[in-house]
Amino acid sequence: MAEASDLQVDQPPELSSPSYSLGQMVLYFLKLGTWGFGGPIALVEYMKRDLVEARGWISESDYKEGLSLAQLAPGPLAEQLAIYMGYVHYGPLGATLTGLIFPLPAFLMVLSLGWAYTIYGGLPWMQAIFYTVGATVIGIIANSSYRLTVRTIGRDWLFWAIYIVSAAVTVITESEKISLILAAGVLVWFVKAPPKQWRPKRPSSLAVAPFLPLLMTIPATEPGILWQIFTFFGKAGAFVFGSGLAIVPFLYGGLVNELQWLNTQEFVDAVAVAMITPGPIVITVGFIGFLVAGLAGGVVATLATFLPCYLFTIIPAPYFKKHGKQPGIAAFVEGVTVAAIGAITGAVVVLGKRSLVDIPTIIVAVVTLALLLIFKKKLPEPLIVLVSALLGLVIYPLSHSAL
Image 1 (spheres, one colour):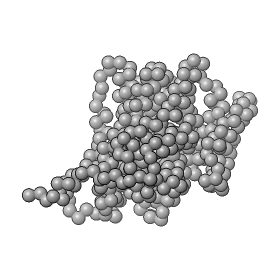
Image 2 (cartoon, helix red, strand yellow; image 1 turned 60 degrees about the vertical axis):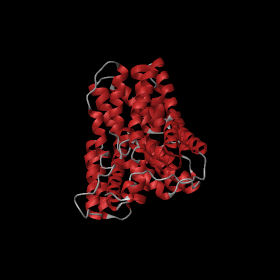
Image 3 (tube, rainbow, N blue to C red; image 1 turned 120 degrees about the vertical axis):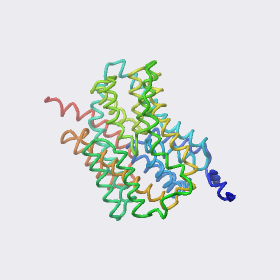
Image 4 (tube, rainbow, N blue to C red; image 1 turned 180 degrees about the vertical axis):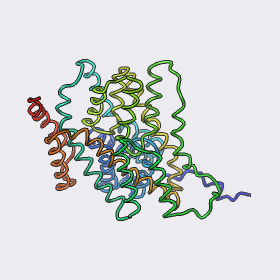
């Protein structure tokens, strides 16, 4: 006969009393979605700085749990962490509101840019802006990557080995290897918290999480372009582990080579839009969807991309909070987190090869990184991006006048 404690094991934990209102949290993510430049690593750093260190709304342990779950489950890192931050004290309602409001400003921006792109047949001025903004963003991400790497990995030799291998594989293949990230979790689990018995009493609800993306591989019928968009971007959202940057190779192969919805130049412009707008990098899907099927395409592409990460956060969240501190699960998550950080660092290198194309862009990236290292938190990243954009309008014509 089962004991009472066994019957209650799957009940979600009670939410603790918050020191802030849900409206304050929603307003914060509206502001972060409007001014948060620098990509996923920078955005998760902003959340830690603002919500944990400055305001004290989220505890260190809750933040780490959210970051671990965001690394473990598929989905863009910053968006998943934002969803979890809303969930901590306000449950599904808080998660839903923060998940919707965080990408909203960037979504509206990319729709506006998509409209201008289709009307004027391209954005020549964007080439000038992206010329320096892309380099600046590389410097911002490099700085955030450095801080996150040192804080997370420390001096653990196993973590450093996983980190280096993951980063190297990402640079070489220019893609994020899900199998490698999961293997890193298993390795750390066996090294740091080996299982005492090979036959668990009951399966963990988290055990199926890595296999849920396979559900998105079911072939779909083609009744219309919007359904095709929903299916393709749903798959893209389900296969993004750790960083929105990792979605770029997946999108390129599908959109340009297979479906031929975009040509190479249009895809490059879409990546440029993602880099010059705040919020999650993945929001570029709104721009792409608009190019393919107008306003409806932009909305469907965005919803399809973000829906998997919402489900992969909100469904396991209560169980993760209860069972996430078990030695085996904690060790597995540590390994996955380290490997994902390595993949993000590798993605920065891959993106850097596309953004740092000559001496001026290299100088811009180095100067940006140096300023951030010197002034640390005193120099706001949006100001750097704004100055860089204005600089690009001056430098780009000069550097390309001889071509």
